[in-house]
Image (cartoon, rainbow, N blue to C red; front, side, top):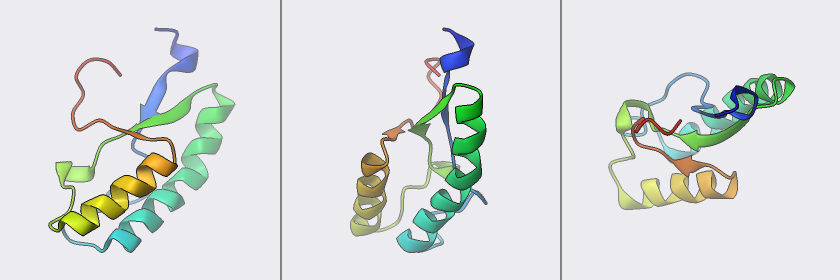
Length: 87
């Protein structure tokens, strides 16, 4: 893979646990992390594509998971639970 176009993941700021914070707090943390991460990656010709939930926790309630997954899809992320060697 051309390293200049490598896809990157995990744009969160403080590694929040969706099982312990609200979906709103989780999303705000992602947006805060994107502020810096997207700028840095764009300067290197890279992009944010994949997202892995910290601790692989996707929320304790279905509606929390659905809210975050909807947000991630609108931002263009693909959920990548684990590194399967394709990153």
